[in-house]
Image (cartoon, rainbow, N blue to C red; front, side):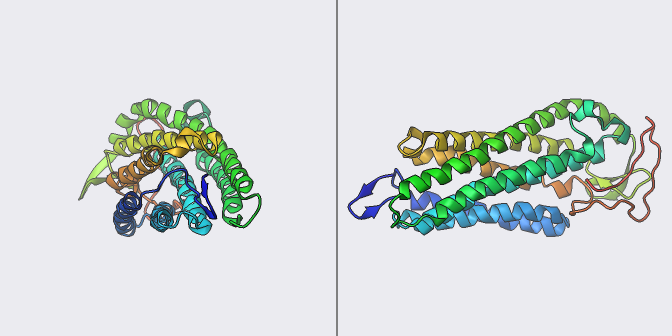
Length: 318
């Protein structure tokens, strides 16, 4: 952090208003499209993703103002906090989508520890819990940064402390999300053996791209593996972003990464934007049934039916 006279810049470079404006616009367009798809597909669980995208829009909009007023701590703290925290919510939604894919694709008797390394019904709760803890720790770090006053004698020390706390939260996120990414990548290959069995239970109902699972009212897109590609790609992108932030915070003020603005846009903004775009392109509600906050245990007209390999189709919360 550099200082000139009485004016303190909270950046180690001259931030670009134009680039921040472009980012705010791109996330804004993505938010409009994602909102439309969420309503159209009644994918209410995706409102968490909408909140995350909204935070990105807000973050870069405030960054425009902050770039023109680099000694304003409030503007700096706001853009820092929301840009840092938004991907945590995105990670949580990815856990939910993966859990839904497993539930709808894998026969009940095959959802074992050997397949997933964790109990299938606990995939979402376990990793979302880690995500929440990570979010709280990062939020604590963000609060320390945002509560720092420019008139404080130890302003530099408090900012460093806040970033160190956020670093702990990021490290926790990388640990949990890294394990999840390995599980998701492994499932990408092991799930191929369930594809034939699932296709044998699908019936064309003549309503667009989705088909009905025989003996159930569930509608699923037979090209669901495209969504799995999006999940795995998003895992890699968020890991890249998280590792970058860990390096940035570990280097501290004056570090090589901190002194160049393009590092943030290439290794944080771009990966997060690609995550948003990938799920806009392969919208979960277009591939999976019941993208609400709860999967109905007993939807009207559904019942358990043994499939050819002896498994049953059952709906419950995951």
